[in-house]
Structure formats: structure tokens, C-alpha cells
Image 1 (cartoon, rainbow, N blue to C red):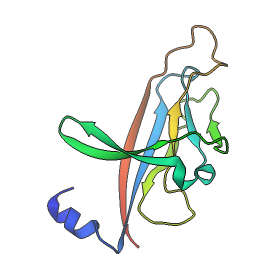
Image 2: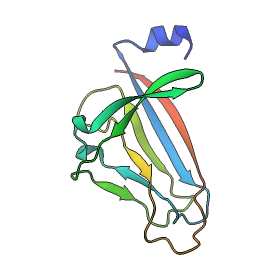
Image 3: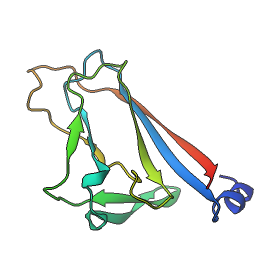
Length: 130
């Protein structure tokens, strides 16, 4: 964001969301699929704010600590025509999804020699008035 945009939008009266769109690039994804955690199963204390240090800046992400109550979902044999869209971050407090923990995992159901995962994602910033 430009400095002018930051002055305008990073104050009360605006809501900012980061929406992630993710899809596989292989015809049928079996190797290391993406799993999404149901945000309703995440307690606030499960999230640990962590610095994300990259060469030209420092940001912040949340790490998720283990909780047996987490509910994870994934789409078995996902195809490119079945993308995921999910909320990465929402500034508005409430019981709605504000974060969506996600991770790829070693799929024990993947056949020997499954095509390695290739994927693409975009992140869209959505700014609205509250």
C-alpha cells in the first residue's frame, strides 16, 4: 500500500480481508494435498504470533499449536477445476472465520509414484467500509 492508502484504510471504519485462492496444477492431486482447518475448532490461544523475516522487510504470521480439537479437511483427488478460496485474515472481530490455518501433508493414501504436487495461489486484499 502507498502511504496515502495506509493513512486512509488502516484506521477504524474499514475492514480488510486477505482472501487466498489456491488450486492444483496437476490433473489429479494425490501427493501432498492442501488441508484446511475449520476456524471454529481453533481456540485463540492456539495461534502464536510470529515474525516472518524476509530480506527486505519483517511481517507477521500466526503459527498454529497442536490441539486435538482441531478439525482438518482436504479434498481427496482434487483437480484444477476445484480450487479452494479461503480467508487468510480478517480485521473484523467476531465469531466468523478470521483465519484459516492450512498446510500440505504427506498423504498416506497416495499411490506409489504419484505425480508431485504443483500448485498456484493468489492473495487478494479486499477493503470495505465497516
